[in-house]
Image 1 (cartoon, rainbow, N blue to C red):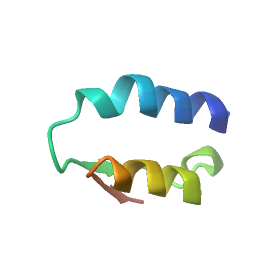
Image 2: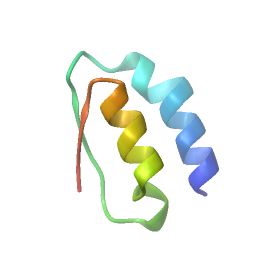
Image 3: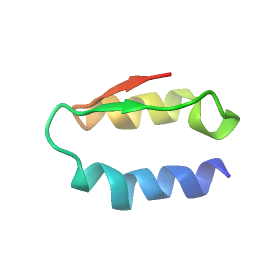
Length: 49
């Protein structure tokens, strides 16, 4: 579920990442989307699929 994934990114994963981390995700439908790309980029990280 995309909403649960986004909440987990915001509340759990992103706060624990080192600066300028690279997140590597598969192409699962709930991993792909502009909202997720923006969230990761605005947090100073990079996203790769």
